[in-house]
Image (cartoon, rainbow, N blue to C red; front, side, top):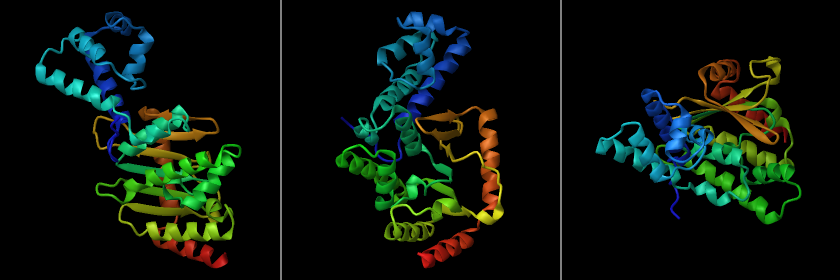
Length: 288
């Protein structure tokens, strides 16, 4: 079974293909019920296809394109090639037995994003964690799972980070609450290694780390952690990801995204400069 190389995204291909099918259907003025009947499926399946939440059968897409009047060979070939790309499992699918569906979706979106902006309150963001720190955090969340599963989860988290140091790496902009840096996760040596790691990766040209200090008091993101993903495809909207205890929200409507964009902009203005981040990390290292 082939896997997506880092930086490509079957998840995004599904979203793009679904959006194309929705646009074509709406241009024809056809309701979802008619499209579903044409491919022997329900209205709800058409809805899931158009949202990119299911896989695609080539025959279904061919039949829908015919129904929508797409007869040009080149246009059909382009959309049908997207079916193949959308159905190609990414490298993260080999961890599917460990991951809930809602997080599998996030990893697929993260892989395809060219800008990742994140705010964290409780922990160092996963893309910036050391293996030892990640192992401690994962054990906290999964205290009863076998050690082998813990190690697979750690390995996956490290694999997610590989894109940050490759060519065409995404831009990562992380704002970390000072509380996350002062919370002793795993003991002194693990925290020392983690803080040192943050200092090192902050020097990479594609990574910016800011700290929201205690001294600022209340701020724009008191509601909790979130991430904003942006994609190189101009016809894809940003996606806001808000993780909850046993699930996650994915927001892609402009009216839902805008408050998070505003909060992130305020956080970046109110948090430390990169130089101030290095100063805080240095102070914390001296305290350990």
